[in-house]
Length: 273
Image (cartoon, rainbow, N blue to C red):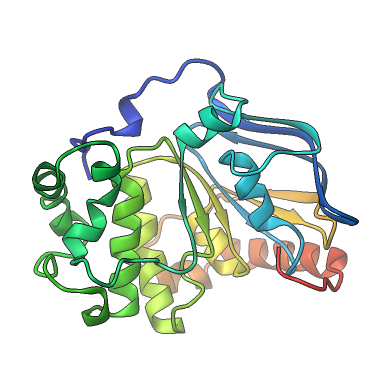
């Protein structure tokens, strides 16, 4: 997938650090400590998947990275920006729910970020239309969200996130609402899409296999308050299919390492985080 989208973040040339860096980050809400003393580095162009038990602050980290939240202690640096507005300017967030506007077509939904940048409706849709074939959506441009399958809706949501032109993609359980078969297909498709059009990615997921399939590194958090307990580099063989990869000894061994780390440090938490 090539560029060519107005506002393409890959060409912005942000100055400063070539990484996302969280240093000693703590965030609490009243008496609840969501994350504590988190140190995390995501090199530019790399993908880090964050896993941990429910309520450990995974989504809190995404809010801190993109500038929608601020740490009580520590610092957050996103490609040289430490202020909330600067961090937000570099980040696009894709939540678990696709949040497509039901009255808009798939094409019109995907064009929303460009319209928000001041591009006319006609020009925004003309810029997005050629991407529908690349994203496996050709022929569905005029469909309303209710006419699309769950997997297709998530593709439209990812295309909308992509055309925002941001350097950093924050993916918050993007396939959590899909059935197992659709989720597997979506994971395989997204992995290929990100390989072809690299971005700096932080993925939050409860699914260890998803973390290993999509991440270059997997970071494990403890139960609340979330702390980084282990990091696992993902170095897997090149195989033809997803099924072959899941059966590869290297994948099985790494999955067991991550699961062991989760089981060792998980604690029950009263709410999602």
